[in-house]
Length: 247
Length: 223
Image 1 (cartoon, each protein chain N blue to C red):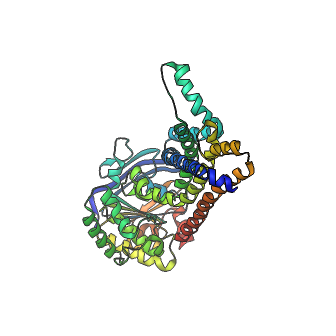
Image 2 (cartoon, rainbow over the protein chains, first blue to last red):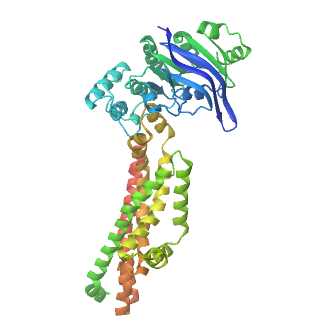
Image 3 (cartoon, each protein chain N blue to C red):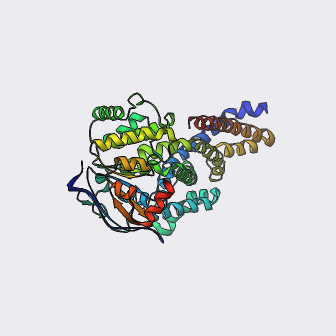
């Protein structure tokens, strides 16, 4: 599935400081088209910040992030245009509480004039079917379970037909019995060839689905490689130490 | 009491009508002022935040009676006599509306700011991550949720504004208190006059505060 000839996201010497706190110290990596990258690491290691720099939800301090040839750290770039092609799924779902499921899905495509209301609704229904919630279009977020909310959130991102999907600990806020349904949707997405960057604590999922695992600690990428390399035969002491704690 | 009601009843009712009119006018413009400075207070721009804070601090730091004299007498004097060459002449209704709108608007700005900030930041982030602009995200996602939490506080602010109209009797606008003063001067029946006035305010304000309570409860159920 990975197309090594096309780099989707290229990160070079990325640094992110919050005042005096250096969260990302020096991150360099390329993410290829169709690649599924799982980012793991202890809390506070900077993995969520790294992810949020990829669509500029966090302004980077220095370094470059190039998405589809656009340097999104540049002031000249229209970040909204770039974001249309980068879907994001959050730990706490962040469905729009004032809108029902269907309106959650059609808001952005219609507002941004990607398509007509009818087309948007059609596509929304298709996406809801994909995540197994075609009968919940009229429901409000408060009427859904956590797992359902997260599946709607994934469908909402997909309605913009993005090239890249970012997942920020998508199953961390879920009850254990709902984790599976969300991971299944993500597996299907990976199988469809979507480029995905996933910050996760689900080691089993990472081993099964990831093309590459990145282990971060202290604002650096400590180790990266295939799941076999990083998860089963880690070389760095910090990776070994972390995996011993979580497995 | 009966004599006051039969003789001056319609006069007082008319005056109360003007009180309500003044309050509604003030509130109407205060909504725009409040929305404007409230949003200015939350946008990601330090200069805007400071401008909003300065406006709120100035208006809240000046008693309304001073604001009333300032707008009604001070501002025309500034233009006509100090700067010169102008002929600014505010009616008591206009000056009163400006006062109420400014005063109420400053408090509204704080209500709007707090309302927007009470909406989880994740709502804005999710909207922006889809490519929506800040303005679209505000209009379609954040404000509708913020306004819901603001409604009961809005009604309370309306009550305060309604009571504040009495202060504008000092610039000669014939609202309820101003009119009642004349009734008292004509009849010497102070107790009866002010009792009637008090009851008139009381009825409307009680209705309003009850409805605020009901709304508050209903909105709490929704969440």
